[in-house]
Length: 182
Image 1: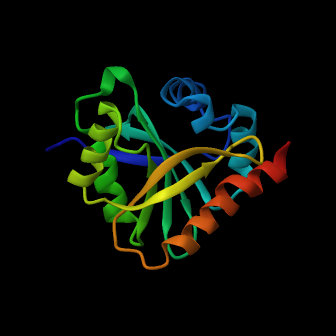
Image 2 (image 1 turned 90 degrees about the horizontal axis):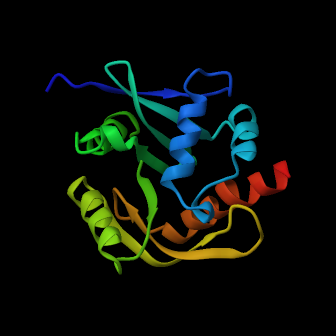
């Protein structure tokens, strides 16, 4: 395999890839599963725990991958590949890249296994080393103090302290940016 992907952290909206990444971001995630772009733009510079990355394959922009370094673990927030770049195992390569470069447990949210697309997504993560760890999670809203939607938490390792980790995600990824920015 000569395909090499790399993650390149975006730290400013001056980045030449920014507008294309925002188009992908808005098209890939429904409003309740993403931040307002102006909020994300402010966060790039002032939230050190957040890593918003362009995914490049041999120098070609092919997607985005964002995650948070929350101390004992990583929280994987968004992963999206441009439609014309799909079915080239780029998502799988991103997960392999994370496994190789981020050597702490990784947690992420998925929709419960109800609809076919959600089941397929869970299967994708399971084939790449994640397992369902927690089914009673409700994702906080990105914009209000309400809880938005029931999701499952998957992770790369068994996690006895999952509830503590979930509280940390809710605080740092959701509540704190809301307080910071509006």
